[in-house]
Image 1: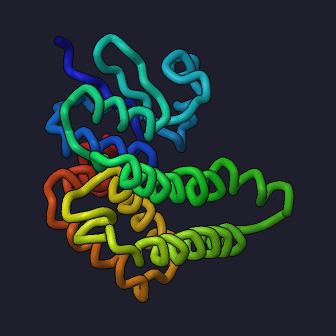
Image 2: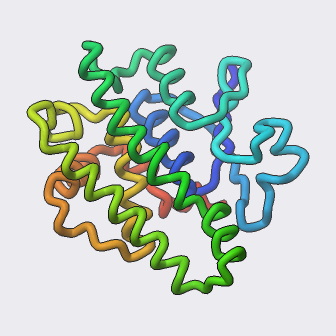
Length: 213
């Protein structure tokens, strides 16, 4: 069977999520950089992989998969990795946590979206930073409150990493990149510390050189 190929960009939150999931599942893959700054995601070659012109795209099992959460659930279902709880209530909670980042914070902080807003508003870099800090900070404050729950353990849900943690860690990276102060979010920081200790998370970090070339 051919090695899976992950078409990604090092700073893409969605790509970062999939890298973590593949690492936790023990799936070896070949990373192929799609340089967003050079508009490679809008090339005819990449649009054949993903007509939305987004990353990541994962070529695996004869398929070309898109959308990070769908890719991660495919990995869960086909590679025997437990990233969702067994019970329906737990799965609903973890998905809600994951979606609060992937579907609420991430879309309004997507660089193409923010750039268009600034173009319409005549904004500058200071406005970009302010926008990012507001929506990332506000979203993670709500996430912190959601973690005030009996099911929270060392990780977002229980004492093993899962889908919610996979979404949270890339968003923490973005928060720090844009200067959003989340130092006071103690539950999030505790989960972050637990994730940082796991090689699967560490190897997926954007600063790993193999993702930039």
